[in-house]
Image 1 (cartoon, rainbow, N blue to C red):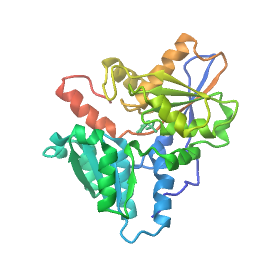
Image 2 (cartoon, rainbow, N blue to C red):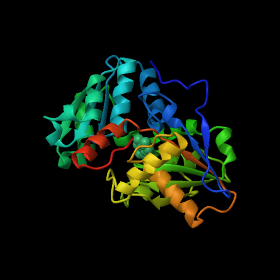
Image 3 (cartoon, protein in one colour):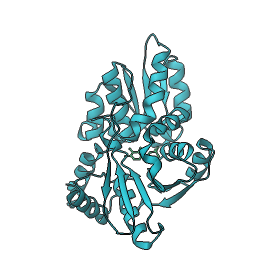
Image 4 (tube, rainbow, N blue to C red):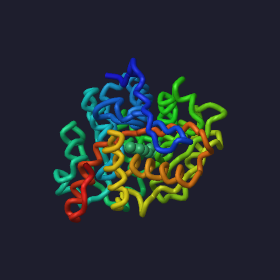
Length: 302
Ligand SMILES: *Cc1c(COP(=O)(O)O)cnc(C)c1O
């Protein structure tokens, strides 16, 4: 199986917040039930080109944390395509309790083999990649978060004639591949706004390497750190779903939309701006987040 381009584009929905601003959201989360959002497009050329080479023993190896949307997407792709997959997971302590983690359980159920490594080993992923590539010379090794040149090229598919109609294109930023693709392939007159959910100073340089343009701004949207969820985030996500009927998750899209609303309030966007936010998916993460919140006796994401 190859990843295909759906015949119908995903919907762009209007969100009314302020009379002077037009805000829309592109539902990339609806692209596929399990290979969700930007991860679908980031894997698109990586996997299709690999399969074009007709490997005798196809194998996909990748990396991620315990709640990684990318791990879930690769596992589901492998399952659908009939390709065995290996996920190198950060955190040795998970080896005996992966069943308690919905993302890892999903990955296992989709046939992914899990290799748990210490945080120290994980930090030296390049070494691990070298070893694994020696052990499995035919394997496709996809980096953490799926970000590489093929991924950036795939993100172009998130843009079409409809998206040309907006002044601002907004996306959450993790490893930077998605914003790099949007920046590289959008129109000359469009501005790109990235909502950084990781506190990583090297991100700017990574993005520069992947796109040749400087048409984007990065806005700090960490809200206390990557994967950290504040009560105000939960309230925002639940209100948003109630009001607009659109689910957001707490790691990326929830923080981006909350920040977009704040920026609109502060007058960051000029009057009559047309803003398009990409819903990059990742809704599988809600279950895992709720398990943690439940343990802490906190309100859950509805
Ligand atoms: C991975 C992910 C992102 C970040 O994409 P990058 O290309 O790593 O910056 C944004 N939103 C969701 C839902 C994601 O899963």
